[in-house]
Image (cartoon, rainbow, N blue to C red; front, top):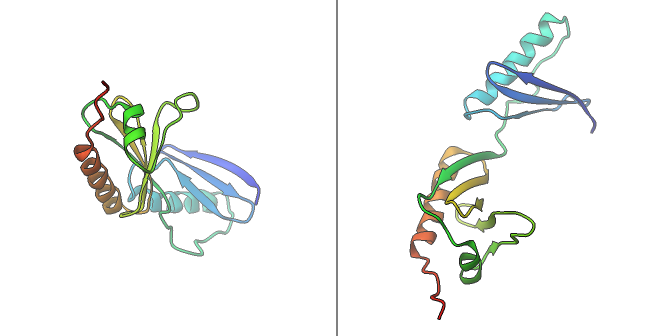
Amino acid sequence: MRLVIILRLKRPKMSLLIYETGKVICSGAESVKDAPDSGRVLLTMLSRARIAASLSEAPVVNNIVAVASYGRSLDLDALAMSLEGIEYEPEQFPGACMSIENPRATFLIFPTGKIVSLGCRNEQQVLDGLKALYGILEQWQPEEIP
């Protein structure tokens, strides 16, 4: 599957990756509601160019990226050493990566307390995942260094 066109839309602001198979991936939508609009905009543009096209299936959200703030700094070295399921390699990437199972979500956690949520398929899953992560962080007590 080869990428043929990258189309950047101004309204709604997002990018469309258009493949030779006809598959289109929408990236950068600011909300879940904006994603289906990209399909309608693309169909309108193709129609104006006299290219016959239609949606063969309804748009599906596969990945929501959300940014949150924990509100305080975090010691990622201590966090990675005391909690399971966290990968932290500061020489390779400045954030820690943590996955949780219920709900299934992945987070990038930065020392500033900023958090990036990845892999959720709907807004409720993002909220539930952040709630679970915040609960883990609130219960976490870093080990005291003698």
